[in-house]
Length: 199
DNA sequence: AGGATGATCGTCT
DNA sequence: GACGATCATCCTC
Image 1: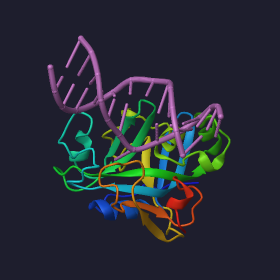
Image 2: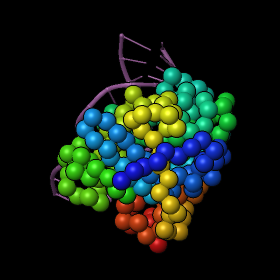
Image 3: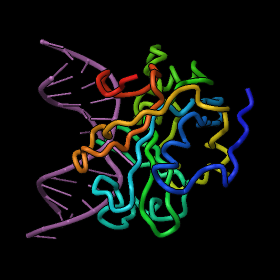
């Protein structure tokens, strides 16, 4: 299967629009071990001035990518155990981004199983830390450009065959009531408890 | 130099 | 549903 790279201009810059536009797109990772890829089924928006956004308290060494140009990979380590993959959003100078929370695995399932040490296909990329493990994404990818990088990129995969629904973001304590999580209705590959995922 | 924290996950009951 | 792992990062002293 060929995953043709998304071109600049095919993604919006505004944060919520980007969170929606990423749904249905394919995240592709290639290295010497092979190709792994999955369709994005769940995202969360972290807005400018949003107290839940890592950029909220100003630029630091960790979050500098969020303040740079849009559509760069922002990858950070959480709880010392898991990486989270985001794309920066908004024009250069504004700190904001979109967290990719879950993928439907579509390529390289065996490789994902080895990296994740599980045979449960549904769980391979269900959760932000899990998908980074399945695709071998770590902090070294922070700042990379998915329009040019040879190891990690985004591809088009036709229209999303599902309605987009919203819910509060998972695991955040600040601005917890805001519905800034977006997911493909009915997808079994979406993370979170069942009550968070009404069809 | 030291302490608190966290956009999670796997395991256990 | 609860809990501990595990560590880079950031803030305070």
